[in-house]
Image (cartoon, rainbow over all chains, first blue to last red; front, top):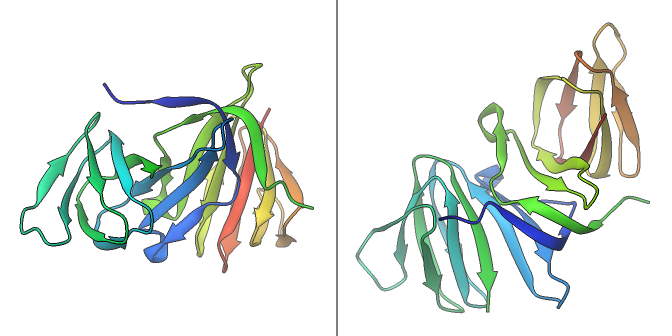
Length: 105
Length: 105
């Protein structure tokens, strides 16, 4: 079961645009100050770097991802998530739009 | 002064992707049920059709737009807005990412 809606948050009106628009996200802030983002990765193969640790939760579509130091491409679909350590990176391979919630920390 | 944040809303986690990703938006719902969206148009010239009337409010970047039946390209920048009648259309020309709030009705 994937998360279709997040209630009671503040949304940043300005999007973050990465890789010429292959990834677009909007930041959200919870009443307790927690920040997350909702976004989409369009068909592409991209490498993302992390600052803080991240959890990528798929809400629609799917991706394959490969963490730094791994040789394995793993699939992630709706309701599934994967974790990326801080100060690391991961490759993501998308053939149908991958819609996600990014949780930090 | 542009609107940088919208508070106390529900956000749809799945984005709407138009024109192969040249426009990406996330729907938001207010406590009273009002629906709007926050989105971005990347560099492109696109034609949008309206169902309900829309007000496009620029929060960052800029665009030029031309309403159906008009010959005039008009510019819209941060803090500015323009209105499109229902069941109509407009062309939009973007050279730097145009970030917007779309108000319906």
